[in-house]
Amino acid sequence: MNIDVIVTDQPDAAAVALISERLDQFNIELSGITDHTPLAVLVTDPDSGEVLGGLIGRTSLGVLFVELFFLPESLRGDDLGMRLLKAAEDEARRRGCRHGVLYTISFQAPGFYVKQGWEIFGEVPCNPPGTSRVFLRKDLSIG
Image (tube, rainbow, N blue to C red; front, side, top):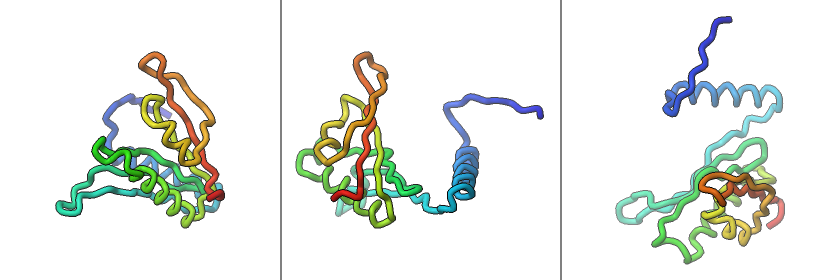
């Protein structure tokens, strides 16, 4: 077979969709489970409807994956982050998830997640020096 291997930082949306769909199909064929579902918990301005921040993730094979979570500084410190994370966890439980997984960066918010019952299970050094990716999990069958 004659093939090309291409490295890019701008993959075509169709290529990303094809790889995602084929991986989903592979997983469905092996597991018999078809539960790959996006999840978003958004914070919006009530007047304009503008999205100000929120949580983006997905649920799949009984696991909540938190992929992105951001709140502007002006919305931090009033338990809003806790409410968003809890809303995502509750929705994941409703979807049948028993576990959650995410990663953050050591200078971001690992302490926030630990306070919410998440447990660190690994770290990988990254740049800048002295920084690491922090991997966390949570047993969603507990509270």
